[in-house]
Amino acid sequence: TAIYAKVNSYVKKLPVDIGSILTKGQVILVLEAPEIQAQLASAKSKWKAQEAIYIATKSNYDRMFKANETKGAIAKDALDQITARKLADQAQLEAAKSAYQEIQIMNDYLVIRAPFSGIVAERNIDLGSYVGPMGKGSDKPLLVLQDNKKLRVSLSVPEANTAYLNLGDSIHFKVSSIPQKKYMAKISRKSGVLDFKLRSERIEADLMKVYPELKPLMVVEAMIPLQAKEATFFIPKTALVESNIGMYVIRIENGVTKNIPVSKGRPLMDKIEVFGELNEDDNILLKATEEIVAGT
Image (tube, rainbow, N blue to C red; front, side, top):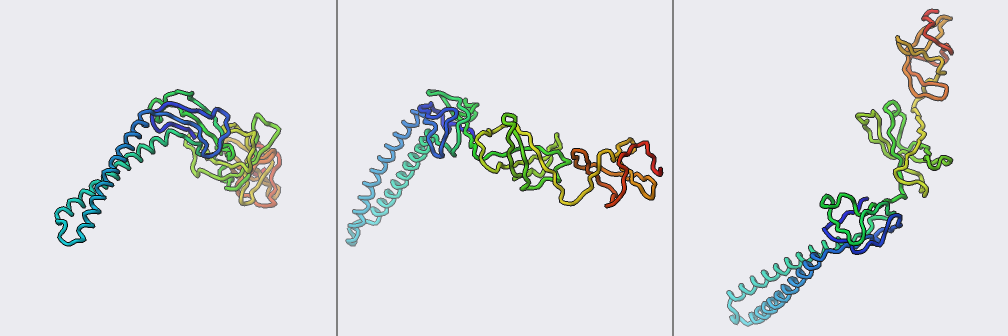
């Protein structure tokens, strides 16, 4: 997450730096805004002054109502006036208190704490720097924090392969900086839509455990198992013919060749998945070419 200042201020304390390990709630930045301190002191004095006025009014109100227990001692008009005065002073006291609390909240923003446990990945300020909210002289964040304990692998899977991926499937991957080690993650999210330009679906896989050597934004090379829910036919690649008239295999029926149109699926090392009007125990030509005419 990127950390920005809520109010225009100066950096007073900077107890962390790049690489600092943080715990949730730890103070990572203390800012200073003299005008807010002055406003806070002024608002507090107004609140206390109004509180004193209200205490005096309420005391007068209580005395008059105590005296009113003697019938006819206090005029009704005087009671109505002191009641209205008490309510007005009480409302002004609440308004002064709210104004003070509002400035106090802004003052609290001057102390910034870590929103989660993690590490400082980026620092763009120094002591004394003038900072402000995003877009008001602060194009870059003050700090960037990262939580490396939960990493995920983001992949874009071509359209032809999306049907074979399911939530919970495991994938294995490597990183170029540690080529001798393999890692595993499980598919946790699928976008459900295709990217308009790349014609691919974005999927995310969560790592099964914490690997301290892995860092965010590393480029990985992933091996994704494409597992079908139903059994399909795989044939040697030499048995598939791709010609100008289409894609087919050559089936032997009663000693005579017959072209069976098919479409390709998943490739293996030396085999290819095919879909077409094929049945178990069909005899197909192992080394097929387009020179072999149907009916041979």
